[in-house]
Structures are given as structure tokens and as C-alpha cells.
Amino acid sequence: MNGWLLLIYTLPSQPSRKRAYVWRELKKLGALYLRDGVAVLPAREDLQGRLREVRDRIDEYEGTADLIDAPSFPPEREQELVGRFNEERAAEYRELYHAAVRFLRDVLHDVDAEEFGFPDVDNLESELGRLTRWHEQVTERDYFGGVEGARVADILSKCERAFDRFVHEASERQVERVTAPPDDVFERLAGSSDMPGEEYPV
Image (cartoon, rainbow, N blue to C red; front, top):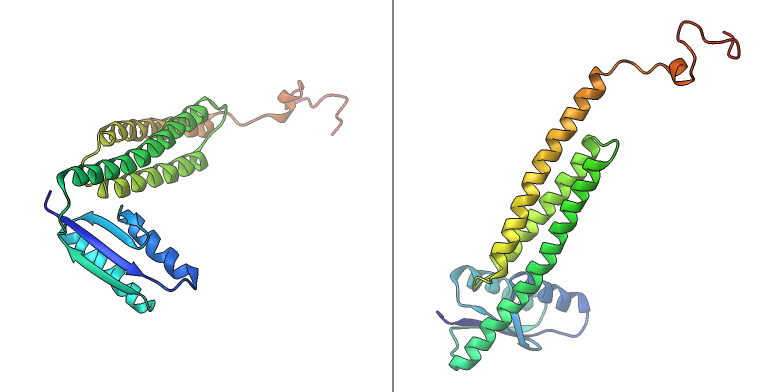
């Protein structure tokens, strides 16, 4: 380990939106709370810059904040912290994995449907983009290389391949619709386009 960053802060209890904002920003970074108002992250230059931004916002909110660089922890405590970071990322990866499985099921369902087309493609493309961004966010805060990351990357690769095949299938079906002979309503009524039938006089 190259050390840690500690953000120790206090904020007025009201309005609560200010406390919620700071909490959300720290969770986006993947910070661990040691106790209320004390968050820890690995010592990295990019994280230090982002924590400074959070500290400045706390000052704007009329709170107090101290950013402490490279505090030391006993080895067993450090291992505990790394374990907690990995547990939180593993939980996120598992949630993402299950979402990816649902995506694959949705693709299979749409392919098996009698009719589907480009609106279905748009919906799935939007969902695949959401999964991809989510994966990027979790990977960015996976500071200690959790073992779940490779498993999630693999299933997202399968999602991309499945979506590509789905788009190809949708294109093929669209071509079939365009080239199909025009629908004859009289034939569907068991009559004839030339002879509408006595029960349907013209």
C-alpha cells in the first residue's frame, strides 16, 4: 500500500440535502466510512484531487473538513480495510452480473417473439449502454482488483455479442417484411381480391 487519504468533516444537520450530496459524492468514489464524518480512500493523486473538490464543497456548505494524506494503520487494520473495499466492490459486481443475465434473457425473449424490430433494438441498445457505463464506474473504484471483475467483464462481452446478433436478426426480418408480397385482405377473409364474394358486395 502507498498510504491512505482521510477526509474528516462535519456539516450542519440542516438542510439534509447538503449532507446527502457529500455522502453521494464519497460513495461515487467508493470511499469507506470509518465512522460518521470520517471517510477513507487509497492514496492516489486522482482521488486526492477529487477529495479536495468535496472538501471545498463542504466549506461552501458552512461545514468543516480536513484532508489528511497518508495516515498509517497497523498491518491487520490495513488488511481489514482492503477486505472491506473488496467486499463492497464484489457486491456491486454481483448486482451488475445479475442485471447482465436479465439483459441476455430479454434478448432471447425478443428474438423468440413473433414480431420485433428496431424499437426493440433501441431499447436493448439503451440498456446495454447503461450496463457498460455501470461497469466502467465500478471498475474505476475497484482499487484492489476484486476477483469478481473478470467474471462481469466476461458476461458483458457475451451481452455485446448477443446484441450484435440481435441487430442482425432484426435487420434480416425487416428485409423480409419489405420484400414480402402485399397483404390481401380478401384472401385473409377466404375470398378473392378479384371476386370479393356475394356476402361482401361492392
